[in-house]
Figure 1 (cartoon, rainbow, N blue to C red):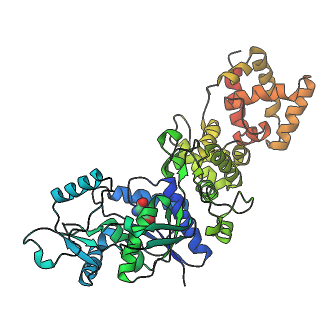
Figure 2 (figure 1 turned 60 degrees about the vertical axis):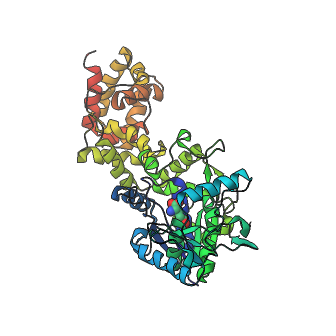
Figure 3 (figure 1 turned 45 degrees about the vertical axis):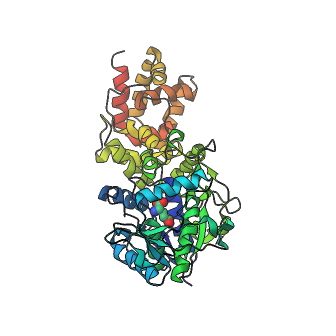
Length: 468
Ligand code: GLU
């Protein structure tokens, strides 16, 4: 059997991290078993399923590096096939036409509730002779639910989950306007797409029992099911806006790397020993459903931030520079010419050590593209005392004579200068850093000066010494 999994999102306008995680698990499971991962857009709600909402899904998955092996299937294009299956069940006597009016259904629900029973359809048209059907009356098609015994799902995460068939009612599979219901569409599509494993959130568990009825009535094999516990907030409550970001786009905008979000989401609810930072290859090699936990996972934003920092430090300098340049382009007063780019790239090894997100990285790199006069943060301002400005004036002379203007020679100049003036190196470096970066935090001062280049360093020092 070739494993075939799928991700079947409804276009809601966002890619929730719970769904992104389900997509990732499906993708990894298929890859691990040498199978295929498919994508189905469940766009039957035509009002919500705008092109924009669909693009959000495609963009989010592409960003996460989750690629389908076949062209996506759009559920809305398959209505005729869904309808055909409903009629096939009707012909086999496994479904029937129901002519109940809205009024009758309402009454049925009220009676059931008054008698303390669950408000289910009472099977009124199940065994009635079609000749009793009222003329010119719209009807729905309902499936004949089994009335005895129980339905057991051998869930690969939850274990055996069972429900008494008496709990299931004769659900509608085709509405009075001829449109198929969601449960029917999902089953027919999964069957036709040869899906072997359905991996999805455990909020779908009750749907699975209903969907099983359709599989059985059609005589189709059920796929394997794996229902994933949901992601909760840090406090254990259902993840919501008040906990923080929830959608892939939000994390992207906050400066997370896709590898980090992937890695974090994978570890959230799946484990393999102590393995924490996993490359895509390792993920594929190690992922299986037996590592998925049964209880809800709690979103830990601090841990995600930490994992992002780890991935940032491992990331390629050119790639990070490209991203930073894009972000700098959106900032006021920052030059984004090739000269700035060269400085950013040069200083990247030091910059990426000190930032946990791409946003922070760009903020820390921005000084490289600014020009005099810089603005100084309060701590930097404090460093620029009249005495220190005089000291920087002398230091500028020494730096003018530093050859070549690279890390080693700069370091030697600063040490020499500190010694000559009987100062600690830090007392020289901090005012200097303040003068050339506008802040008191930057990568090593020698690297920072080398990245800026001599002319720019002297110009920046002059700007703070000129008026003394
Ligand atoms: N379209 C459903 C959703 O977005 C998922 C259906 C499924 O995975 O079976 O929640």
